[in-house]
Length: 372
Ligand SMILES: *Cc1c(COP(=O)(O)O)cnc(C)c1O
Image (cartoon, rainbow, N blue to C red; front, side, top):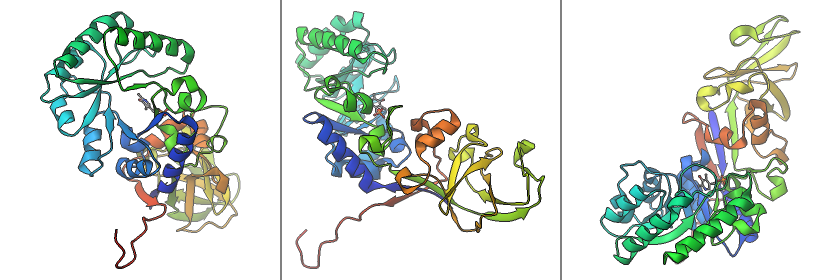
């Protein structure tokens, strides 16, 4: 009764649209966190169909999930347990991000020759080699590379979205320091969706496209349509109860909502355990049969209520929380606003009880006798 319908054709189109804009830079479809809640393996396949060159994940377990499903494209994983087993990365052909000297030493000690992308901190203050350490770490990396213990395939950083140009200047310094140490990485990369779409300087060899892949805008001043992107996820549930109640009926925990007239209450079986933000209580928009209602009272763990007045809503009708707003339903952005958060958080939190249903064109079946 709970569905996240995933439009895989939209994933393919979104990648194509962004590739057209950022070319000749290569593209990495970021499918971490179960593809932002959309399902890592099917989204990865649809992104590759759209011409993505790489897949990006956070850790090796996520990378192995792709490999286990038979995905053979280049995969990059960048945040590791301090005891991460880089032998596995070599064995499965997974490129790894390396952010500090001890991690570099671990990679160098792995059996085989790990493919490493050195991460530099240019001003986000998270992972990455601090500028003062660049000369020493780059020299160590070059020594390991010369000895055949690893390959330095990339040099990269991540932006804070505060002063991108200052960070890009610092990244130029990192490139110069890497070159001075004798490193010649094949891929220098910086931009996620936001910088990739708006700042040509951040495109370089490769861009890492997360949120745009899902048809969601990273910007406050433009929605997905403004970026020619199509929302991928539609979240809906079956109405499981519909009943007439008298004026003065309290609704949900604490009775934050009390009916002011005789009306119809309907029950939607999605709650905060499914990722529906409790902060969107009394605010979250939900469309049923073409009309948008607001959540009445508190979102509970498994369910919430809508007051639909005298509209006829029946058990079995479909309640749509968000989807493609060009079809008249609320958007992920509407839910982010209702909950006081960002659109990224809305989709990534959709829980496991919500069944992912993959829509989109099924691959053509070769005609009988036709060579495939
Ligand atoms: C998540 C992530 C991305 C993708 O960011 P979007 O804003 O979703 O495009 C890119 N690079 C890194 C390092 C990330 O963690």
